[in-house]
Length: 82
Image (cartoon, rainbow, N blue to C red; front, side):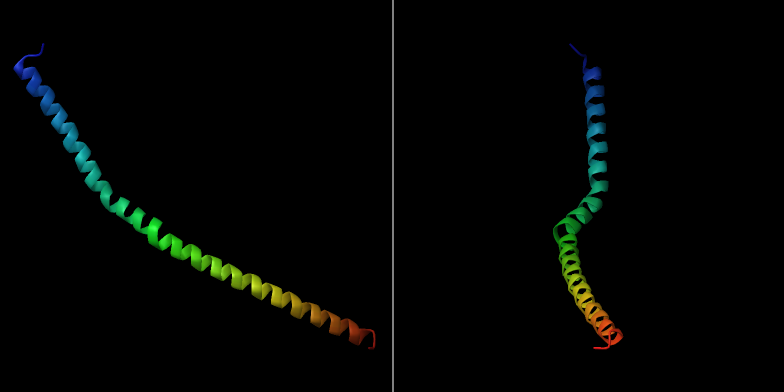
C-alpha cells in the first residue's frame, strides 16, 4: 500500500499528464476545425467544380476534333479536285 505522499505524487503526475493532454487537444483544435471545414464544405465544392470543368473540357475537345475532321475533309476534297 502506498503512503499518502506517494499517492499525492502519483496524483500530481496524473494531473500533469492530463493537463498536458488537454493542452495538446486545445492546440490541435484549430487544425481540426480547418480539416472539418475543408472536408465537409470546400473540398466537395471544389470536386463539383472540377467535374464541371472536366465535362466542359471533354465537350470542347470533342468539338475541336469534329472541326479538325471537317477541315481535313475539306482539304482532302480540295486536293482531290472535288
